[in-house]
Length: 345
Picture 1 (spheres, helix red, strand yellow):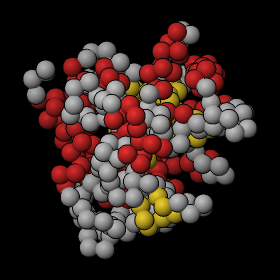
Picture 2 (tube, rainbow, N blue to C red):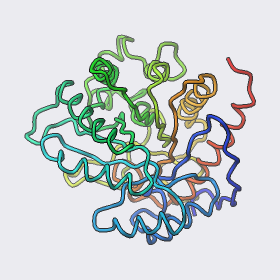
Picture 3 (tube, rainbow, N blue to C red):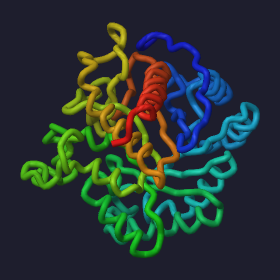
Picture 4 (spheres, rainbow, N blue to C red):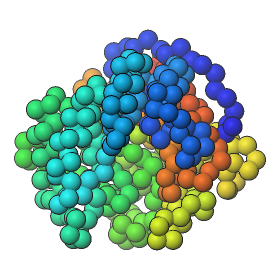
């Protein structure tokens, strides 16, 4: 299925400054919507030899099964994520953080919706309040928390990330960032996507630069702040094809948040596929890795592959999510080894 079977790989020896590479739980399946058992997911992710951890929070009603799999396969759930709404999920937060810790977790990614449970748009101060509450709970558990750049969340307006980071730091806490470049590059050369989050005018005037090849671009500014503790990797392409194979409950077609990493077989993808279109996504990963190599104080600790099965991503596709993930993971591994051999800039 997908881009062809990927051979088994011996996991490289861990070296100073290496990061832990994880596989998202939604990637541990072939056709979307047909996941194997939790035990089988752990087995296949560990057996491929490319990954260091499984990326998830134990899911509701399956907590014991996930924790058994962690112990049986001796394979930690170092990272995991959950979506939260302020005004609704404050009680859920400490429960999930404890679950993450119980699963040998080290970092919990908090995706905070742009809207409060009562419908109003969160202010920067409200975002900071939620962060600081999570940060306090995490500190007590010995668990790192982080906030992600993501569509539908407070950070979809990309300009808010630096503002919130500054406010968190002004309150005496460390701002931990999850860089998912797909949610930036999704908006590159895409006026419709830019308009959805209100950045169109700033892009048109050159105040906000999204192109990773252009000096002064947003991702470079984030990387330079050394706040990225986790880089999620799911390729997208500029002005990419929407996921016409899936619709949201309100009838909207899926957004263009996922693009195959290797050529799908005929009939597996709903659009033409071109390898060159992946270069902006690859370039961001190279930038993250070079910064990690060149900075002794680099805070990067985790990377994850993120081929997933939701409507804005791969729902309805016919390529193997797992095989695409393996190809991406192998590329990350080989690219990191190559970058370590380069002379530092």
